Length: 195
Image 1 (cartoon, rainbow, N blue to C red):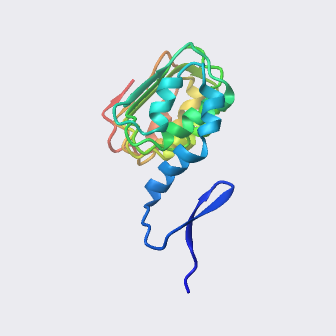
Image 2 (cartoon, one colour):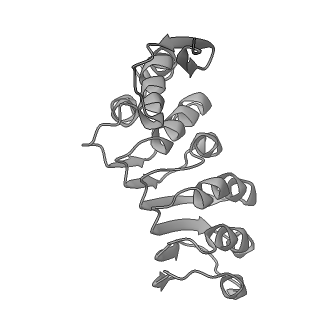
Image 3 (spheres, helix red, strand yellow):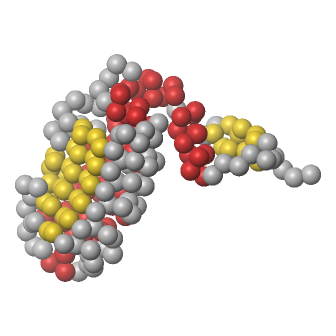
């Protein structure tokens, strides 16, 4: 007799019939919609970005971009939003402007992306925040355009994370490029635009 198959739901095991076929992707979507309903409600009900976060969470094909601005998110809401973006198949553009207090929490959740093509982060990134964005840069295979506001001391870790990646456009907004020798030490074969 074979062992029953199941899906791990963070704190429990849900047995499935032996003829039930679910891909890993389907299981992730199931987990996101089933397992975090209460957490989503607690963090976003009556708060900024509820509609947008819900669409991203449910993998709505119509939601392909998000601009997060001056409206603030709690650390937990930002972490959840980052996780929703990471597992979404349709999000192509993500733009952060204004002074988003929970930006480090956002990138704690957004450590990879299946679909992001463009990431723009307008607030000046400290060296600590640059460290929090590095996992995303190494785990976002479709990322083609990156717009960041950072100092020259943070350019080297960013470029190292992009080494051999498909990035085509790298823009430092209001940033100080400083010593561009960091670019020369890495291979960015698809880079067409740098400023």
